[in-house]
Length: 114
Length: 115
Image (cartoon, rainbow over all chains, first blue to last red; front, side, top):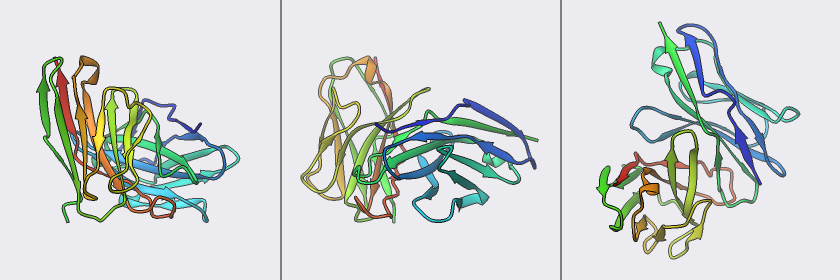
């Protein structure tokens, strides 16, 4: 069975500071990893994904994530947070050959303040 | 392109009533999915479809039925609604079942309350 853990319910960051939202996963075989963002009363928007290749993945809105196989992690990062980044962030994983069934984490609320 | 659309956006039901949620996508995607989102639990897969005329159970299928009569539409039915089905429901679609480009694209959601 595959699973995702997002250990922090909420992350608070001041605008202009770097941010990290943590994600660890468990899966048999090679993982496909995704980050989605959800703004209030909206659906999930795709941010970035890791399939294979370079461990540092760049995505939308200046976000990036680093795949670490030994630590089974896929943390989301941004060098300089904006107030508009405040939202709910979901990490998701699927194993190759699992018919695209994603398993989502419980989400981390990012709050960026002035 | 509208992407993934869902109707209705909001609905209030009484226990025992039935309803159907409609999902439509205009991206010619093969796969479609229904999820429910509950506080502190992330998204959980209810049912999914790998193509027109096919459906399969996800993680939490009980109390729901689905149909995919047309490639662009995926319907989620509640035959006898229960308060435990109060949730926000999201539909998603993706293009390829085994390729790399299997990013799922989500609709705006339907907020359902069962009294």
